[in-house]
Image (cartoon, rainbow, N blue to C red; front, side, top):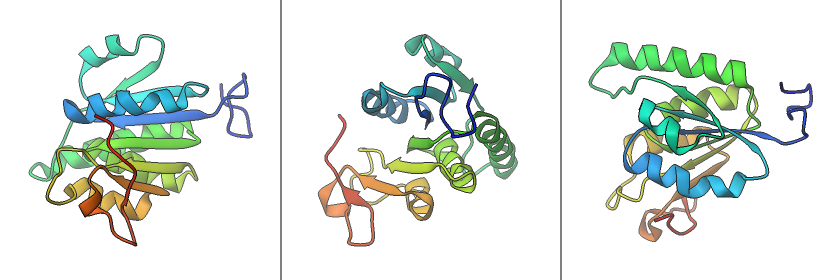
Length: 159
């Protein structure tokens, strides 16, 4: 249970870690050790991923993309509900659509937000990453040539 100060009963911050499948999920798992002193709640799209983080609470959502507008609306509502219920202090995502909506709603609930664009986006930022940048307190790319003075910043790679 989260206390009024945004911390759980043990005094730890709550981190909502969000990623779709494949490389997004792999990269998210590589950055979550930075939050080991905090309570991490995961949001992802595959039930099978629950077994990779057995000590953590996991929410499963349907994935969506720009080609299915109805699925995006359903995903946005579901992510909004999760953020409202969990009330995280920090939202971190490596993409894609579930992470974008998590940052958007996280920002509305005054969470600190972190977006790490996927390492597979070698030539340009992902569409989700480009959109999420305006909601991210920390907006990162894993390629130095994609960094700009206004963001994203380059902070190394996670793979």
